[in-house]
Length: 200
Length: 176
Image (tube, rainbow over all chains, first blue to last red):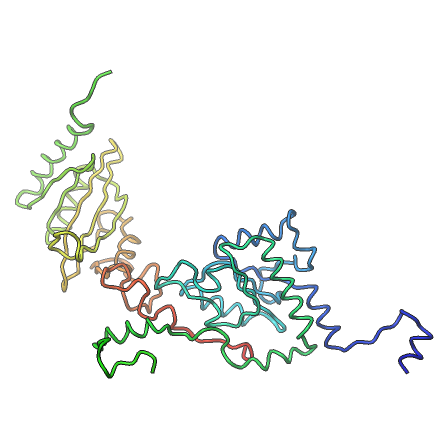
């Protein structure tokens, strides 16, 4: 059947799946939500500017309303006062949506290992692509966006059902072991106490 | 070109010292000099009286109000030091006024009745050090969330905190 159609119509018709067609469209028109809190935001602006020209990769339409975006780029450190805002903005974005964690601070807290800085946004929200660097160069961000486009094209579905499978938290656990140790020390436990077991 | 043996402003500082000795008769003020800075330590029990006297002596601007935690610092005997950096706008004279506080009584009267600019500065000092200011018009934390329990600039507070940075709900992809 397909060969008969091919004979009659030549290259004017091709067959694909609905998933692939939808993902092709989505991957090539990402609308980023720039959540820029630090110097990574400057690189993000530079990526969108004329020299590096993010529009060559179909994702130049930055919108500052989460309702109009489908790609959140978290560029910079997120402090404990900002994280509820980040989570609320993420929840306000319509499906399908993706998240890029840009730079060392967003991925892991970076050098800011202090009481106020969240040690990686992936502890509290899902992340699709991590970009290392402090800050990453625009080429690295473009590479990350290309990787995300490949991820969308390979795994995307027209009704976004692949997201429903991701029911578990994907980042490291919320509590660090050393923080648990400090909490227990404050409560009177000693490290050389035989009953003391920081893991269990 | 002449070499100056006396420091600039020393005559004005001396005048201020005389003026304060008159207006704060009976209050023990400890004066010291460090690299052109004039510092005075006053007792925290006479705080408002001293601050009003400083203002009457010409220091009409509170350029900064901060605190220092002296825990395990040198041979310091007091725990906290509240620092008032004062400026005389007319002649540019500066004065660092300090007072010492110790636990458990960390309440001092607010300086907002003297310099209203102390409002946010005192809230920040409370936020970071837990020093309480009575009669403040809007006394609550300035920078940290209101539900924050600790005072992070105290020296006995761990740098990595006590789990505050991890006390958030985890959003999975399926439910977001």
